[in-house]
Length: 376
Image (cartoon, rainbow, N blue to C red; front, top):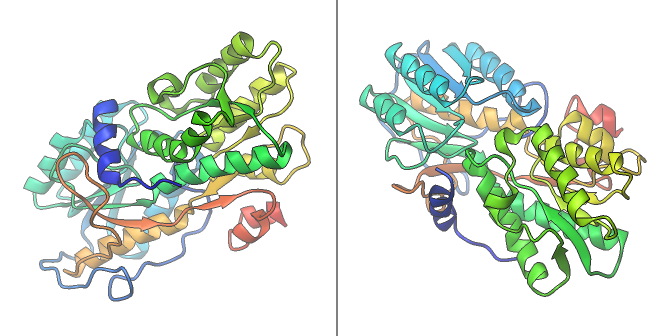
């Protein structure tokens, strides 16, 4: 598959929009070393701060299980480490998140971790944090158009999209060995810069097959701006799928749907089932409980795949960054080339996503205290 650097991706995202999903697991565990090892930054840094310092965690809306889990893990992890943690959600929009970050800065936060609701509208708040001497960490979603973000911790989101695209192809072939296949495309919310990255990664895999006729997007809606799902809301995805089925599939068969996360995948399947159409192959992301149940079930309308982005690991990596900074050390980074936010290349610690289908679900979730009970 074609691999494009995230420098180009981020710049495209900036021009296209102005940042599921991480994953699903339960208790906090896992650790990322702050010294040594292949691909790790060396320690050295300077400064540091008191072990009981105030740390601000600004998260977006609670639109999926992974964000709720991240809240619990951050609260516990910061308290266990002796920090004064403050975890806030911006359920009422961007202005609320801007105010929350500014309040964290005013309260003297030494580190501000930001899971951006809209990565293109937080430059002023990032600057205020830096001017006050705080370190700014972008969590899961890159903060765009500012030099005032120090680190980025996330799963490799371009790879997530590529895995989703490959899963769709694999599922189609398993269901019907020979094409062509009729498909439709969904993307996430346009104010989430990850949504464009996921979509572009999937199109790395799918576009060559669209170009050679193996895949046919019957609606003709192939561009990111045509397939977005505002606020990642299931009802928006279901309404669009209802309309697509009515307009394009009175006689044609829908073979597959690229869905960027599990919530939207379930909405797609609800729409198809209600329309009395055969179940298509549907992808997802986040390892949400209901989707994992679906994947391992014998339901004819089962979801085909998801992506495991273990939130325990992502939060643990972020906490390790904070602990390293507190000690005056340089946190682990694995990539200092790909993630250009439009102004600078942000040093990133990237974790590896894992594609999950019924065939490997048991192995994929064997260490997950919740999902292992579902997969047996």
